Length: 281
Image 1 (cartoon, rainbow, N blue to C red):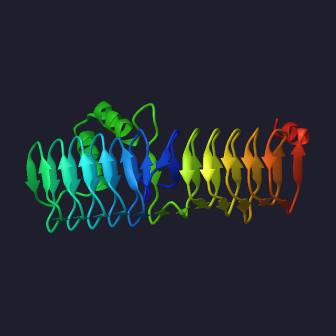
Image 2 (cartoon, rainbow, N blue to C red):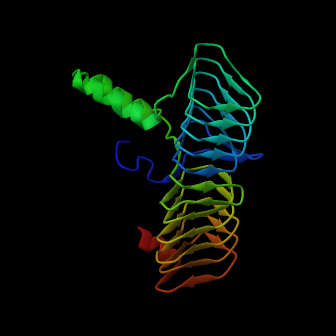
Image 3 (cartoon, rainbow, N blue to C red):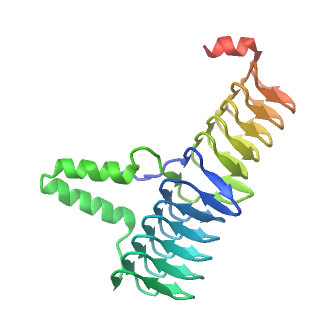
């Protein structure tokens, strides 16, 4: 969390779906600065860095924190507290179930309402606040409380947050990141996935292609409605996965029960069927 880039990959947790132009997850959503999300977002708590834009509504069961210069083309609903940094812009309405902490020159076109306290000032950027509070706890010798804070903010215990790295672009058409991408199990996603390397779990339905610079793995029972290609890495299509397009990589491994409808191209070794299963063991 405290490194130079705390969100170092695209991480899509289990059972995440794209529903009617909304990205939906049961856990938290963390979006790195200067990213573009051409979807609405529904999650537990939603946190976005500076200059993030959303093309749709934000619905948070917990808190919603939008740092400076964020843009939301829609409404924002936070069932608990909300924090809006300086010059944030919301084209719709803001409804907050708890307290509202709001910065200078914030523009909420259709007005706002909050059930708790309303404080107009410049709220601290999310990571800055976290670092300062954690440092204060450590200076007081509260190591156990500091550790609990890290565990609470890093994840919600039984579920990883959905993380979108800095300068990413997410839409129905494509998910483009300059980091690795990890997709959990039982997700339903729309759009082509573009990343440095891609690891897809089992039981997913991806309405798009996978393209990476390094290795690509497609888990058992996953269906890819497009090509699976890599420039410099290997490809492994596991178990009973289905690829409705071509597969291309350096070394390509296709498990016995997997199905590839298109052409398989390997610049190095190709392993098919039962031999691939033996090599994987």
